[in-house]
Structure formats: C-alpha cells, structure tokens
Amino acid sequence: MNRNPYMPVPATIEKIVTETSNIKTFTVRPEVPVAFEAGQFVELTVPGLGEAPFTPSSSPAERERMDITIMRVGKVTEGLHTLTTGSDVGVRGPLGQPYPLKTFHGREVLIVGGGVGLAPLRALLFALFTEEQKYSRIIIRYGARSPGDLVYREALQHAWGRDGALDLGVTVDEGDASWQGHTGVVTTILEPDKLTCDAAGGVAVVCGPPVMMKFTTLKLLERGYPAESIYLSMEKNMSCGVGKCGHCRLGNYYACKDGPVLTYAQVKDSPRIWD
Image 1 (cartoon, helix red, strand yellow):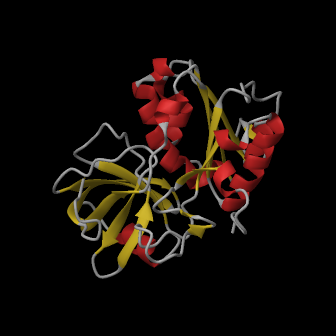
Image 2: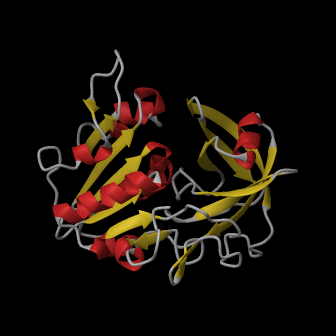
C-alpha cells in the first residue's frame, strides 16, 4: 500500500483492450505493488491532465499489475483513451472500504451490473471465485444498452469459464439482428421467472448508472432482500478520495472514505442518492 495517500505511485500502461466504442480496459503496472481488496478504488493520474477515481477490475490476488476499465466521459478519461502502451500514469491508493466478504460466507451472492458498472464487480467476482466453496451460490445478472455496449464479451460468452456452473443472465435494452439473447432492461431478468434466489438469506451487490441502481434496488426490495443486504457501489461524485473535498457526501457518509461500498440501509434516507 502507498503510505502517502496524496502521492501517486508511478506506473506504466502495459496493455489496452478495446471493450466497446467508448470503453477500454487498461492494464497498469505500478513501480511498486498497489495491493487492493475488492470494492476499493484508486485514483489514476494522467500527467498534465489530472486524476480520476476508478475501481480496479482485475483480481485482487494479482499484486504486480491491475486492470482498470474506463468509459470515455470527461477530460481525464478522454486523455486516458488517447494513451498507448508504454505511456506513463500514476496510481494513488488503494482508497475506500472493501466488500465485507467474511459476512458473505455461507450465503448466496447475487451480482447485478449495468453497462460499465460490471467493471468494479469483476474484481469482486474474481475474489469470490478464489474461495467459491465459501458461498452457497454465485449469481450474475448483467444488462447493457445494446450488444455493442457489453463489456468482457468473451468472458460473458463462456460464463467466466465456469463450465455451465455459473448462473449467468445477460440482457440488452435494445437488440439488433445478431442478438439472440434476452431483450429488456436489467430488472426484467430479476423477475421470479428469470431468477430463483434466496432473497431473505442472501446478499445482493449492485453497480451501474444511477437510474439502473435505483430501479434495481427497488426490484430487489420487492423480491424480499433486506435493505442491509443490498450493497451499492456509490462511486458517483468522488474526487479527492480521502474525505476532504466533500463532493461525495451522502448524509453522514463520504463515498470515498466510508464507501464506495455502502448498503442501501446506510444511504436510503440520504437526499438525492441517485443523482
């Protein structure tokens, strides 16, 4: 771990994978290992442009390098998308709180991702897979706007190499001539006919655009998940990463310091949590 939370570790981009027209996965090798746990995030620095927060999408067990999947949406991400292999960046962190995986042991884990929101959940998946026997069941439900907006398509196609043992459901809002799968927003594959789950005893983890998270949370509550068993990745509006700027405050919590992993029970009474 970098001892100074304000100082980035110099790093080099080793590989770039184009996921969609506006999403790329960058494999970054820091000069010294930046170990993280699933759910934590880092600040990625582009020299001369600034920094932005991202949750690594690779396995936490990999210490020498990390994958970071990034959508092109602003100044820093625009700059990142122009970089090539060999480019210099900086990594500051890890920051924030990880998923409390020990409290998941013995329980069913439902993961619901929307669009690039599957990226932070990918690290969680790898963490779950490394001790799969400790969970009663792992379920994935993932949605994107169109087939062209699906990330990690090869992993999805092969169900993360689980030989048919992984309960995986994928949908798109609007299909095309090549799409043979389910069509509809992600909540349509959370209905009882598409998902058999242990709502009372299991946990659900959600990450995606705010509107997707809102309606997914409402659907999970309808299915019977307690508010304290719904974990949300509240990454929106994070800036400094250490609870100083106040941009990411959610009631009594700071998403960057107390989260970004927060339960719905923790934030449900905060105003405008889906903005």
